[in-house]
Length: 340
Image (cartoon, rainbow, N blue to C red; front, top):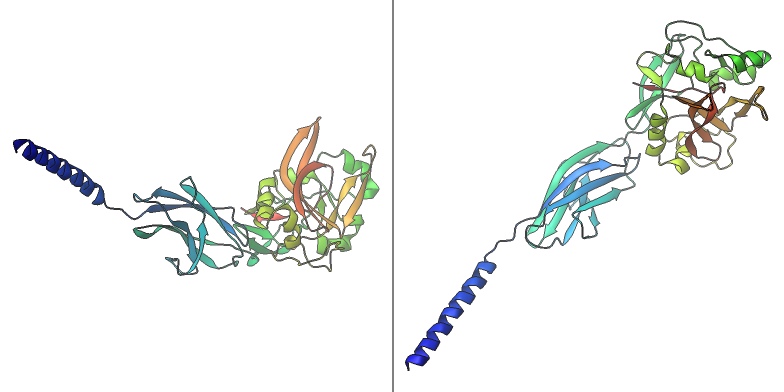
């Protein structure tokens, strides 16, 4: 009898220990997940990327994660939202496309586990496009309308100035004095085909020495765009394949091979052509590209084989836009100024 009593007591104690352990597991409380909205990147005129991270799953699997957005603060999943596929990493990114320009959006991340739904930090952004800004006047009293595109403010017209910002005159060198244009290491300008009537629409063409002269072509508070600033503009408008179409002025000025929509950005790129070197030995210059090509000089230069080269932006009648570096300082190109 003692033997059976002892065995019963042992089994009873084991049962208490087992169920006690189970009870401890059962009473561990699941918490809400913790999610963080990290940053907004890849901003274009109609889309952004929202980067997020799951900080904690709250002790249980995440069953849904994503971002929500609206035109009012504190967006929820009852507003617009985009789910993200649950992955093996804690970080995730979501692209928001087909957004409107010039309206303020509010966005934040969210995550869901079996306990419930929680939200991350709220961010806001506005995708500026074709927003008129204050006009600006150069040293020669030429007045330029301006436009906001993203975080940049640009002149809507090509530069027409004939003096540096300090008042010093810039030489006008025509094809009749082509050798002087080729040999000078000072700033110079010209009009396409040496035709002054072209200037009202297309502005002047400036050599690289005028563009990089520290006396400055642009009005106070403005500067000639760098290659990075022009890349920023092109990328904001969708990149190489699409930006040209959004930058170009109307078909009244362009002989287009692929006309679609014009000047959504308000930049009003004008196909003023350029003054380039003739082949094969670059012993003369010629005008080329009117109504088909827009060339915008940048302030960036470099030396290759003892020759100064310039970066420039090119918008074409094929609707693409690019930044390139295969021109030299004795080429003449249009100039656009961007606000400091």
